[in-house]
Structure formats: C-alpha cells, structure tokens
Amino acid sequence: MIVPGMIAPDFELLCTPDQKIRLSDLKGKRVILAFYPADWSPVCGDQMALYNETLKFFKKHNAELLGISVDSKWCHLAFAHDRNLHFPLLADFEPKGEVARLYGVYDDKVGECKRALFVIDEEGLIKWNYLSPVGINPGADGILEALEKLDNP
Image (cartoon, rainbow, N blue to C red):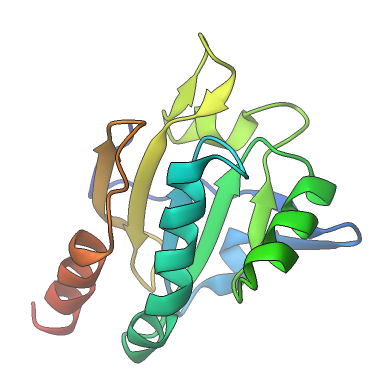
C-alpha cells in the first residue's frame, strides 16, 4: 500500500459508460479515494451509503470523493442509481485492478480491490491512508480527521 508523503499515481477511469475522470484533473482540490471490493455486497453498500450522507462534510473541506472497484461501468451505473449515490464510482475494470495495483490495494487471490482509503491534498500528495479488514465498514471518521488536519496543519 502506498504511503503518506508519496505522490498519488495519476489514472483515468470510466465513471459512466461514456465519461472518464482523470485524477490530475482534480488538482487544486482534495480527493478521497475509497477502494472497495464490489458493488452490491452488504458492507460495500453500507459504506457507500454512509459516504453519500457524509458528502456535505467532505465538500466543506474542499474534498471530492471517488469510489473505485473492479466492477464494470454498467454495474456501477445500476448500483449508483439503486442507492441514489451522488459521487462517481470508477470502474477499474480493464485491465482489471490496474489502478488498485498502482496504489498497492489489489487482492490477487480474490480478484478485487481491498477496502482502502486515501486522502490526497491539493498538490496530489497522499496525506492519509487506511486499510480496513474486508468485512468491516471503515466509516468516515478517519477521513474527516485527515481533512481537518489539512485545514489546521
């Protein structure tokens, strides 16, 4: 897992069937990367729903949230619609797990992203990370604490 102080590897992934997001295009904003194993799994559904409810707090800290898993753009579209999510879900689909591998959070044994969080500052530096056990929702407290530390260094 890449560590705080490192430059966040740039990437470009589909967020809808015809739109992509490039991490470097968000320079000047803080970015939260939430890698998760799979759409439709109970823990992932709860985690993404919690982040959806927490978006207003993330925005107060000038932070954009990006969810990332190896599910396809179509799966993400259905999941986001069903859960009424208001942040992008990025498809690390093909080559499978390429971005998760860049961040050191791909699980080769099961072929999914690990449940990992990163907070990236306005300059593209990783400021905080957390690897959660796959069966546990990591919540939002750590993310919010990391954002508050960036506000008050």
